[in-house]
Image (cartoon, rainbow, N blue to C red; front, side, top):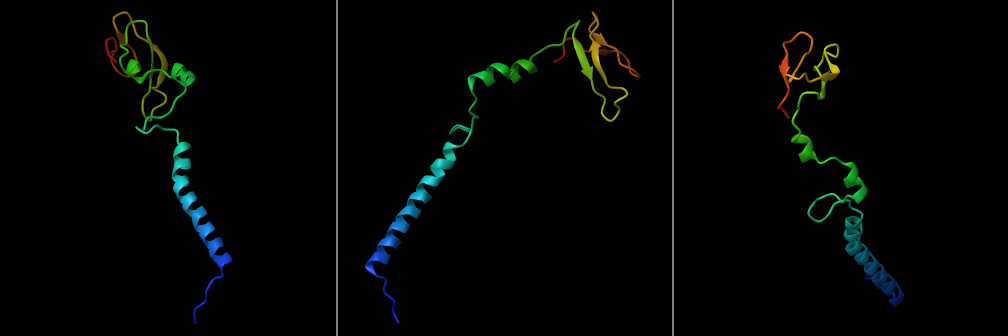
Length: 107
């Protein structure tokens, strides 16, 4: 037994197929438009954020000198960790239980 759809049912099915096709074609475009990265994978950042964010290249190029203040962290021993250790004029720092450490000239 073959069931034939009426012409109005065919029109409804064709319209539904068109709508589904349009949604399937437009959905990836809509998702891509909501992304926060460019085509190259770089994140999109506004000018205000750039001004507030320090350049990581500059931070890695900083060289410690006399008069600087360092924070010393000792893993699993917070009693030995210190904040605000001053670099002496000879370029060394003093910490508990170990010899003086040369810090000047290091990054």
